[in-house]
Image (cartoon, rainbow, N blue to C red; front, side, top):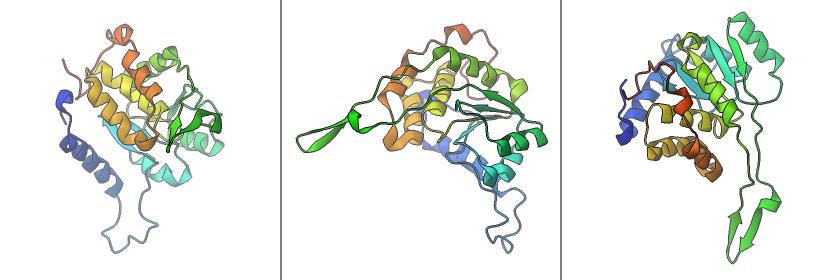
Length: 218
């Protein structure tokens, strides 16, 4: 799959989704036996980022059978909380390595909202996204010895979106395409602060690392 990221369109996205659907369909019966118990369930916001790289929300036990079809070697978790015991058991039994880069999430509270005339205005609190943490996580993503790898946070929107967005900058995507992809997953909860972080993130210290992905521009 080869993508032109300065002209990224829905056709490319459709191809990636077809590949994801093929994974979901693998090992499912002929249809007569599809009573719901035989179907694999991907995690929230699951998608393929590139060959051997996937993204999603936090997987739970209902998603384990699906994750097994990916043949994962590693998982990158961007949440700071201790990894759940059931998930750790799944990783151990499947030989999957966990890389945890804890980044605090945040929510909008009532003091970030005020009413102006007939509409509400949402003020985003300042969030110091740690560039060094994102940089270290990117090194794991770029190392093909960790592939296939799944990147996830809580919902697969903001922290995961920032990491993937910075990865796209390494692939020389234009910012418009980077933001479009981020907004597809974040939807109504897209954050200006996340997009500002991706725009200002300096990838120069990572350019010496090998880029062997189908989507990278040479």
